[in-house]
Image 1 (tube, rainbow, N blue to C red):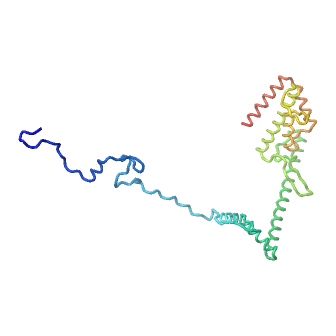
Image 2: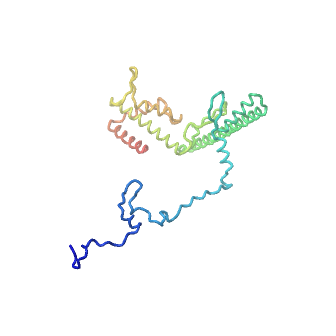
Image 3: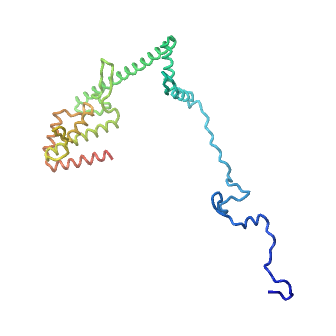
Length: 282
């Protein structure tokens, strides 16, 4: 198509020339590995972390009240070190390695090492002996005081006092200078022993019920049969302190007492005891 003036045909009007930056912006941008979308890229001249690098926390200085010398000593004397002996390599705490080196030096004739080791061993034995004597005296005094208190309650017709440790649980061996407690020493331990007694009695109850009904789990070995409930009760009883154990005649009496109940009474008793044991285990 020509214009009226006879000039050359009209073509598309050309705009001003684009700058290099504008040409780069108009290029097709392929998003891929190492090329995130332009909308998520950081703008030029603007930091991606305007708050700056976070400051490192300051380490609190060691104070005298922290006892740093004790801490350093403990770290060093128990630090594992490599030792070679008789062609074998192994690791020992530094303190043990030093003592071993000193003992080997003593065997080779070093009198200073011999004297130091003997004095060290004698001091350690003396400490253990004194600790043993003090424990014996302490437990003997507790046992004597507890027995007096129990006798006083019995004389006045009062119920036995709740003593921890119980005098009957304190075992004294004067010929060896040894003393120990075969029983609970704290209220928490006492509760655990009470729960064990309750569990033992529950198994005796189940054994009596099994004997009357002829049902229940059995243990069979080489032609012999035993009630599983009775075995469990006997096993628990062995781990109890002497004063909480059941003599054979008393255990038989307790089983006979359970057997004297009616079946309905035994089943109700079993349900009650089981619910209490289940609450303990929860």
